[in-house]
Image (cartoon, rainbow, N blue to C red):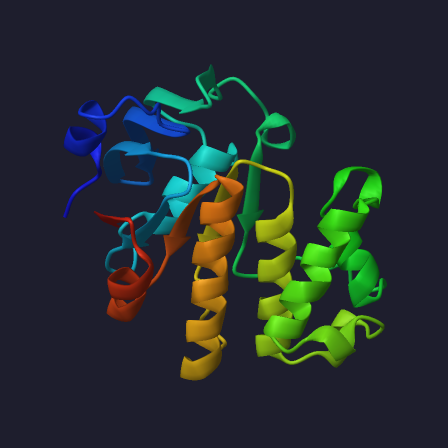
Amino acid sequence: MWTGVALLSELNTSPLLYVNNLRLRVGGHDWHHHLQVLPGELVVVMGASGSGKTSLLEALAGFLPIQSGSILIEGQAMEQLPPEQRPISLLFQQQNFFEHLPVIENLQLGFPKARPNAAQWQAVLDACQLLQVEGLLQRLPSELSGGQKQRLALIRTVLRPQPVVLLDEPFSALDDAMRQTAGQWLKQTIKVAGQVALLVSHRQEDADTLADQLLLI
């Protein structure tokens, strides 16, 4: 296991995400995290059930209070900011679609004022085609399978114009072939955009094929 701290100290590039001695307490459990992530890097977060993987994402996004430590994104402290003011895009396991709106409007809601520009919307359409959901845009979420919802939620989350992307088991409903396709799309998109991503997974192959850093907790 490595968190990149030693390697980053040898580089001139500043981390986009810096988690400094973060302490979390949930129930009777205490967790400590220290992590530095460069632009374009993807961190796979692994650990047993109940080890605090989801809690880490919730703390970074502002939904779980921290005991001590700091969270810096592009050098700016996040600890005192509410979730809606943090430059973070988070994919919950529940995916959180508005059930009364068609898929196309759910996708548009990921952008400021629900109005993606032409380049942003073309990226969405290209991703929909690659992940084989391009024919679903006029459907309601209730008409979709679990795997279809997961692919669409992944597209909406990753392509939002936010520097930090947090993904909680984003491939759990996908078969192996689509999991590989979605993973490679995610890794390439993060790299090109200069974002960072933390991806919670139980699958070792995700760490083997996608991780620039592996965080075991």
